[in-house]
Length: 227
Image (tube, rainbow, N blue to C red; front, side):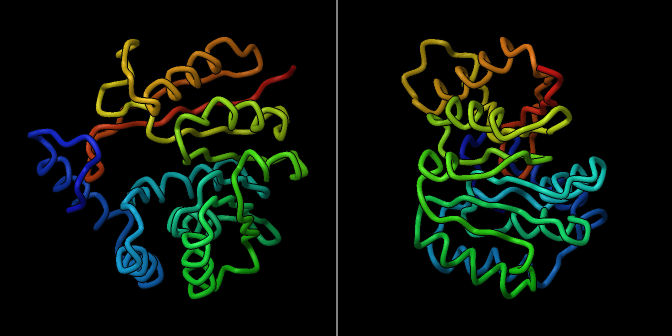
């Protein structure tokens, strides 16, 4: 069981249920297990999505028919592998990673999974990389440094089209998202991000709390409408 960012007394039970569901619906896979093992061996933070969350991202791609996916925050490529596998023929994931060390590990994991032809890995700060990308993307997954979430949302909208799905991870922060006086820049970044979503007339959105092996957190789900 991974150590949640925001542990509670119920974490062990939540992780047990996650394990049960994962065994049934997102069973262990050699390439994905190898990626997680490589990430752990290299000392990467254990911030990868869970297997069930990876399967959810893959299902979103299948349901929407997304061909061009943008991921902001590659880490070791675990979520990238899940999404790249779900793409139709000719589809691509453009994934941005700020750390060259993390990017090297991700690149190896993606190659070992046989998906390097489906992934365009860009190395650099997302604030520097995003202006050089050509949209529109069909689905955008934001899972990087939370203080920059407002900037990532601005660029997601610039790189979107009507119908683009925008997903934001780690928005509950163990319940801390409700604390307007928090001094945690991650919390304040998420709160500003949510305020921007709520005020943006082009977006229809919701937020989902999750519990499981990663503790208490959640996602935002948004669809871009007509401008």
